[in-house]
Image: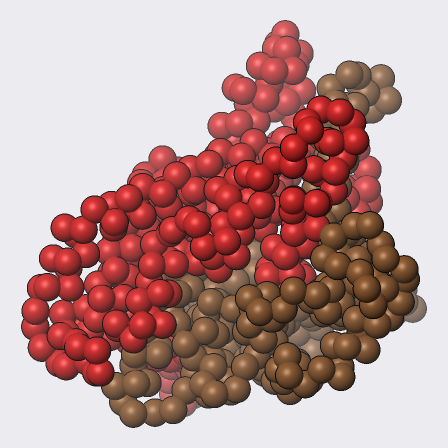
Amino acid sequence: MTGTSARRGLSFYLLATFFGLFVLFLYGPIATITILSFQGPEGGLTFPMNGVSLHWFRNLFEQQAVGDFGGSFRRSIALGLTVMVLTVLFSLLAGFAFRRRFLGSGALFYLAVASLIVPSILVSLGIGLLFNILGIEPTWYGSALGAHLTWTLPFGLLIVFAIFNRFNPAYEEAARDLGATPWQTVRHVVLPILLPSLIGVGLFGFTLSYDEFARTLMTAGSFNTLPLEIYGMTTNVTTPVLYALGTLTTLFSFTVIGLFLAGVMILRRRRLRRTGAAG
Amino acid sequence: MTVSAVPSEASSASAAPRGGGVRRSVLRRVAPYLQAGPLALALLVFLLIPILTIVAVSFWDYDSIRIYPDFVLTNYEELLTSPVTWKTYLNTVKFAALTWVITLLIGFTVAYFLAFHVQSTTWQMVLFLVCTIPFWTSNIIRMISWIPFLGRNGLLNSGLISAGLIDQPLEFLLFSDFAVVLAFVHLYALFMVVPIFNSMMRIDRALVEAARDGGASAAQVVWNVILPLAKPGIAIGSIFVVTLVMGDFITVRLMSGGQSASIGLMIANEISLLQYPAAAANAVVLLAVVLIMVVAMLRIVDIRKEL
């Protein structure tokens, strides 16, 4: 970490250029469709721009023939929020369990890891078949919710493991020595310390569910979620209305990340202020 | 997971003698099961039982109308004796291998730059966030965003034509294997960057200093010190990229314009034709192949040490 500026040789600039190109590669296409979504009414799917307008955004909300865009959006949000809450709750609880040894902990851990490795389409097919055989109608809030959890829970669990590994148990001991009950220790010591990381787990859960396509395919039942709706559009819509949809959903994702980051920032600042005042 | 159990084991042992009453100690023993219960239940109902259902249905019989409980091997027979299956597997493995090599090169270089060349922690976090943000937007949207770039009249073709490098639009750019691999790299490069970056951040900087003091060149440091120590991250990233590509069907369908096949796409097509037993047999074989690949990768590195 010392002598930083002295070491900034050719390799630094080469690597920095590579990094810049990588970022361009990541953002370039999305930036392109954002610009193209403002095409004029006569414009097509590629450049040149044929005037500038909000025509395709209006089109997105008018044209009901395309599908149930509003309904699928609402369903995706509701599903994402439910998955988020359950992911935080289940993985935090399991995180507490894994701090002690219990019968079957190894098997459960490998089951969670297997959940990440099993291809999404298999989860979709398996749940679809199971519900089919049992004669239960698949629904977005039932079978699709379960399918999404198989994807978000392992991520949540791994993040919680990482959090507990860095967690200093001395805080808990101190609380116990001061006479706190186990519940008080969790409520007033452990949870406040973990809160910012738990928000991260929630963000992960929400966005993974909000974007999930393959696991929703056979499990959503008769009502589409947003990714299914978008997929339907990509196969039969050939106007910039597709890009307008892309711009809006991307904007929405960025807003969600922004809100979460702001939340974490506020929490951190509040804690700093509180500890600063106390000590 | 057992790693995390160690420190708390000590603390709970020290607290145990103070715990009053039999009821308390029963609760203490039952608690982990109650806590792990929801997770275990969710994974049992929505992962394990569905997979077992697939295995069972793969032996069932079917016709054009419905499926029948049975025990026949015809689904596997038809699958494994068909040259189409083998060609499709080969194609899928080709996609996986190409995507793996490219994402590995990109992931290692980007992570190395962030971990060892960006000096301030704030900048490290900012640049890392810049890399992760596109990951949060819809995969399908990220795929279609390549259309105006790669299409016949796309940015790349018109750019190359106006630069005088070509006089006909390049047709292979969109709806081709090239487009499929490009989209895979675009979608999954991050799955390589994050774990490798994570591994590299754990490397003791003193080791790098020592190697340099010992007279190692920059390339020697990377090859003999950083690369071996970053192996767990590389393994985790590789497992993600390979399994995601092996099971994919939507990227292949959208980006190849229906001209390429993959196992995932084959299964999706069988599902849409309601040939569930055939799809199930295909899924079982795919799962076996993916598991063999993952086990092979875990043979090389022990990632459990990472958790």
